[in-house]
Structures are given as C-alpha cells and as structure tokens.
Length: 208
Image (cartoon, rainbow, N blue to C red):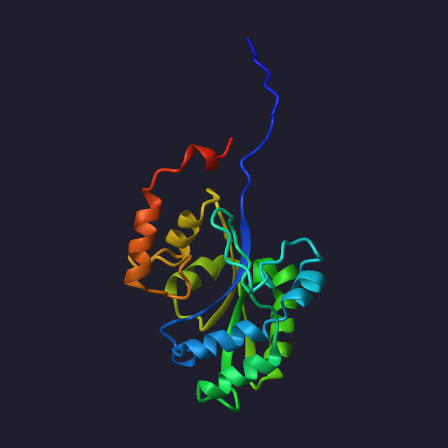
C-alpha cells in the first residue's frame, strides 16, 4: 500500500556569500586593514550586477539602532564608504595600500567572477591591488582546508538556521572546520559558541 503525503513546507536554509580574509596572513594581521576592506566592498553593486538582485542585503543597517536579539542573520551597520576605507588603511600604516590575492571557486564562476572583478575595481581605488585566483572546483575544498588563501569569496549553506551553528562551523577555532577558511581563532568566542550550542531554545522562539 502506498501512502501519499503532501509537502506542506520545508525548513528554511541560509546560503550566505561571504568575503573572508586570512587572519594569520601578514597582509591582514591588523584589524584596521580588515575593516578597511570591509568598507571598500561594493555590496550593492555585487547584489545588483553579480547576483542579479536575488539576495538579501546583509549590510547598511541603521547604526543608531541596537542589534535585534532574535533575528538571524543580522546585517552589518555599514555599506561601502571608500573615504573611511582609505582612512582606516592609513591608520593601519598602509597609506599606499598593498597587494594580495582573492581566490574564487571556478565552479561558481557565473557569480563569483563578476563579484571578484567588482571587488578588485573597488579596492584598487583605495590602493589595494587584487589578483584573482581561479581555483578549479575539484580543488576548492582542499584549498579551503589548507587555510592559506589570503582572501576568499566563499559561501556557506546552513543545514540549521541558527547563529550558533553558523559560528561553530565558520569561526570556532577549536572546531577547526574546513569552512573556517580565514583560520580565525578566538578562545573567548569559542566559549560563547559552546554555551549557545547547548542552550535550550525558549518555546516562544522555536520554529513551528
């Protein structure tokens, strides 16, 4: 006997496209350098041109408002600001910029390559020269695991749409996941992640 069931819905899944800088790399060992790159990224152009406006902006939230407690993911509180990016580079002792490499997954070239070109052009205006490395899809995960790429355009699919799951997979130094391409290690954050992972979810915020 066959029992037919109607699909009523699916668990929503997050696909985030992110730019990561290698934390153990000399080129990005200064927080102000990383912040400068963040302010130089042409977020809206990437969404409009490279992603065909099929993405939810994760930038430009109101800086005067506190972060919402139960919302995930949360947009950062700035967009592109080239003047501030230049100022941050000067404060980081790189007034003339520097050279680095941005690696992309060639199997995702349809959206990754135009995104990389937009980033390359934007960073050039603040003195940062970007060489684009096109990594074959068959080698991409091996390259991610090597944690040697100075700058990466990557994506992360969340099987579970919870902030602790995202941070455990991409920023937990103890976990050392392949998705921690930036090789980020912060013992204090690791402790917070562990607390969040095993905390009980209030009934009022559980998915139904």
